[in-house]
Length: 357
Image 1 (tube, rainbow, N blue to C red):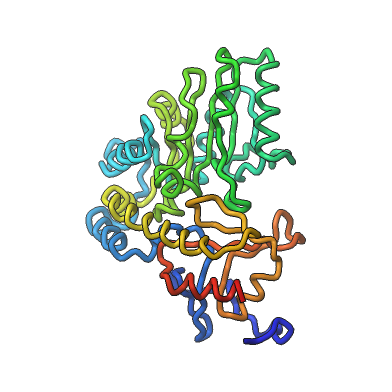
Image 2 (image 1 turned 180 degrees about the horizontal axis):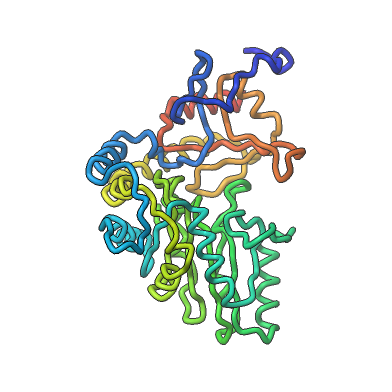
């Protein structure tokens, strides 16, 4: 084992120009590294059954479709995928766009005019209307202040915008506090579930946990490119709100995602279920030997350590983890292990041996 002092800058490989698919291992300069990063939580980009479905979709629908969803001639797979997504995740209706960013921007820009906007802490940039919202509160502090603010105000209509969770400092948010808001207040709750959909709540994501009350309009936006492995964006909501979004200029003017990817998504429910089960086995294997110094949410595959030197130490063991400065470029790096369904038992045992050395 090489000590950290013996590792020089010119010995560190170029991790910015990788020319192969991400998987449980990455080969760089003839060296194989175990990889514990990224957002492919269910390992779909390397799932051969899913790849076979994708290829079948390409043969059926071609590589792409640059025609607007409002064109008079349409591929039926888009409506099919939206119906399946709504049913799978528990919503009344769904809308699919070409990216998670577009789904979020479409939703926020269309609905922000319907009430006074309040941002939760650490809202993803895809949710921003303009500049970064300024808040330095914890989520618990924010929700208590939000209840007081709304209940004391004469304003009736409110738009609350939040992530479903913090995946960097793992925390899954509970929105049941909204039931403490006076029933005469009308709330539109926009939740970005990009990191939770396909994983949390047995894979069904945040929608089924959001409070269902007559004065609360729920809407979930998500990238399908993470756990679900499809380059597309998703919006879940009521029939009325989805119909409103589909009449917006952003939706009308945008090209849809690849039909082949959505074809694979519609046929892959059992593939997702098997991958989710494998991921949970991996999570249990890792957490059985992690110390109390690690922060994580049960069943979610990201694990935070405050040990800022961990990434360098693991690099010497040919193990790569997620490590980058946050919140500013000059900040110390945050180091996380991210598990995927593509990891094998031996991968996790090797990781644990290196961590506990």
